[in-house]
Length: 168
Image (spheres, rainbow, N blue to C red):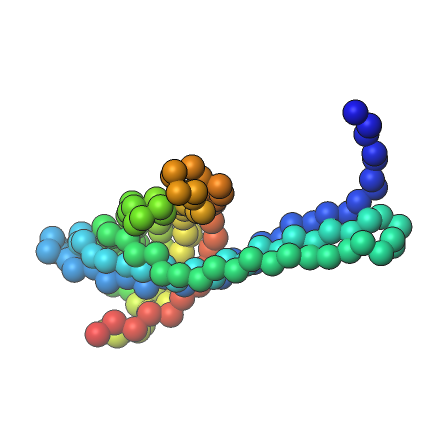
């Protein structure tokens, strides 16, 4: 065996854009709090870029890019509590696990937010969002069922968002 050392520069970058929308129906409503169930969807755009090149500006450079876009639905539970006439606290948790063909995956979505109500229909606030995605894909298979490629995506996405809400 012979080992050849190559001085190379490699970089891998990710660009993730996501948007959430959900609706909760509140069957449990009291004076200062309410709890409900609903459905939600997360729309996600994921892009990964791999770039490589030999150090020192030698010619062999290149890059490869993979993109994926899709809706990720979930079942949702939400609890809200009024602290005063204008301040509201909300906590929500969503989940879904599915298997379709050779793709098996799931997600968890959590959210804590504080909202200031500007009247009957408008409000604004800030939220802390926690999300986990775990997807496995068996990919290409031979006629005997042997997997030639297995893909896996496991990621945690934690962020802070600011929002304006219209209630009807």
